[in-house]
Image (cartoon, rainbow, N blue to C red; front, side, top):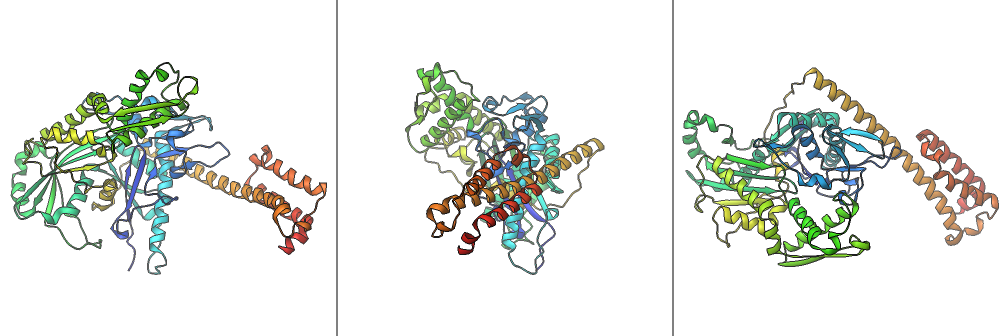
Length: 561
């Protein structure tokens, strides 16, 4: 068996974390990061000019980071190009006031203090995608194993498919493809997230609809900072054939009512074959509504009502502000399980006092009524209206409500959904679509590799991005090699010092001032400007010298080990 030319990679770039799934050639395997996690933090950390960049899972946790860590990479890309215009209005992004990094939105760049340099949002995303690519290649290599009849995939073999909200403009989609190009991913495309959800749903439930039957599905996906609502219709092929006869009469709704064909399973291990298709009746997305808004509502509530915080002088994007926001996030999660809860946040109040945050579900529901719940209800109502009247608010018309995304685990969010569609309190939601469904759907949708039309100006920008990222990646590799050698030297000196007290052959170690001076001098050099500025070649030469000097001083000890 020969591995196909392209390995499909479905990607869902989230505000906090990114999910990645391989296509049918590798059984839709979830891509793990280098630490073994199922998601990769969407962040980049710059540790300084003489240190390699920390990308994805290696980046500093955003909630505890300073201005040298950039998170929310996907949102920066959208904001810099579109201003997040939805329904003719620019959405206010409440998360913006909590950003610790210097986001220069008007210029579309982020200033990094440790580098004394600005990077565009596209360049930052390219850095992150470079890490994703390495994780993908590592997973593919692990899965291929020792199969001698399989050619190992290279970056040229990868086809990245990004699942994005339908509201993404063409400029944002192009910028995403350009970021992938800069990460040396030559084949990439963008697919609407609603189509990805519909594809996964058809895969799972396509065989469950009887002939001439329909099933209307409401899908609500609430992430940390973005919410999407879609109305799907799972329909038997026989019924669909009749519907397609009226296509010409409904051209005005052509874009809203997309048909997701049964999945081409020729390259898949699943040969069941579905008799049904999924029709997308409508979809609505909001780029500034998510579970993170609840954290912000609680943050402002406690700042205004707790005496120890009302007089405390700190900004939302300060370290204390981040600690308070994190405490609100933990309290939100606690209230998803308990009717009441409290969380202690250390050293943020007046005189660095600890602060206790207490709330009940009922209080949080009242606080979030206008900023969160009403907006969500409005989105669902709009999706129902845009479905063209096929789906009404009656209980008999919505067969299934699928919830996905962390925000939909919150009880008051579930209550709001039941309320707007007229469902009773005992109505049971379905969770057949998990948090990886967007990435999975992107990897499943059949596609053909298409060449992107790129004008001269855009091609010049892409080329510069690629050259810059290649140079930075090469520099990172050199810096990592330097760190490895530095660590070898440091471990070597530490071992010699420790051996004096713990080794069975400690008596063979010299006790002269010259030897002590050698150890101390090496330690001093490791933290000197000379070491900091040394090249890899100079580090290797230094390490060789140290090993030679050690042999001179400790030949008997080394021979006896």
